[in-house]
Amino acid sequence: IEDIRRTKDHDKFQTRILIKKRGKGIEPLQIVLSEKNGTEIPMIWNGAGESHEVVVTTPSRIKTVALDPHKLSSDSNRLNNRSPPSWKVLLNDFSVNYDFQSRFLSYRAGLLFQRTYDTKNWIRLFFSRSDIETVSQLDYTQTLKNRHILSTGITHENRKTAQGMLPEESAGIINLGYEMNYPDIPLLEKNIQRLTGTYPKLSARLHYNQKFTDRSFDNSIFVELDLRRIFSFSNHHEISTRIFLGESFGKLFKNNRFFLGGSSGMRGYTTMAFQGENMALFSIEYRFPLLRETDIQFFGLASQRTLQIAFFGDAGTVTDSRNIFRPSQYKTDMGAGLRFFVDVFGLYPTIVRFDIAVPIDSPIADEDKPHYYLIAGQPF
Image (tube, rainbow, N blue to C red; front, top):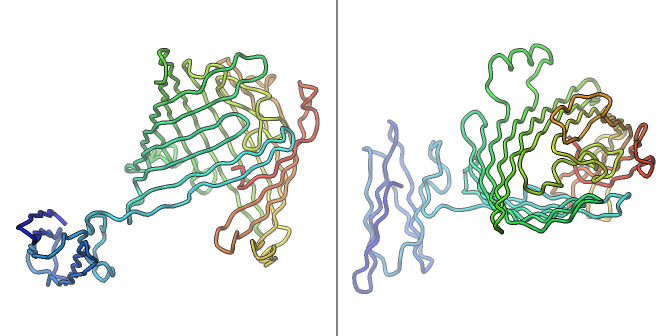
């Protein structure tokens, strides 16, 4: 749809629609006009020529114009086939987690708003509550070539401070982000493929946050590298690995940077046990199925498909020093867990995870005990 022009003459509405074809070939095209009163006007363009103009006079305004609504043509780009574009709403993020140590119930949910047939641009509405922070966020994300991602948004954030630190007020923050996934770097790609056999999931992220709710105008910059790799072998056994490196700069939430413990980090420690401006985390898990292809029903609300067992270990550090590779400062833990692969309401597949982790030579006496988690989703 190249152009739509509407005019009104007394009680009649005239609509001119210009349709252009990109490329060669002749193919019939269905055109459906929908009036405001609900009437549909179907038409056919035989596909001859490079453009086609439609002029209609109707008793009510033309509300929508749709090309090939039944997808009968070979058109590969359908983003411009409807005016105004239709939108879809996706639940792309939902989890409820319980930390038995802090007795805190955390949850998160995210909705994506996307144009139909568009997989590269979306608007996200996100909310989360954890023992670290409460976040409400609205952002826009665009995917570029080679899986480069740009994002911008606005966030209201209320962070908790570690024990002994002065509390900070909630803040409104403008966010700018850049993320690179599976980068097309020939030298790196060639060597990793040669060593591992496949190309791992590699993410490099750069985030800039600017506070705007008071006169301090504090800001922060986060640089993160997240490398994940799953080695699968016989009978559905797998070894999953993760390397996370992060550094931060700036004064925004100066007492809160990276947190080492918790369900998504070092599980042998509580979330706020250790915090600092820079972080390194190395994790490994060995996973294998105990039960497969089952159909265990839970009161008709969910059905279990697979029961998986996992043994894991974590090693990491978080510090205000820029040198994060000091072995003497690293904390370690080990543990085991159960992973229930279930279909909620028979429609929504998810993983319910129960983990038990124990710190090794904990420097904090209160942390030297088993830690329990009931969580949705794999850790990495």
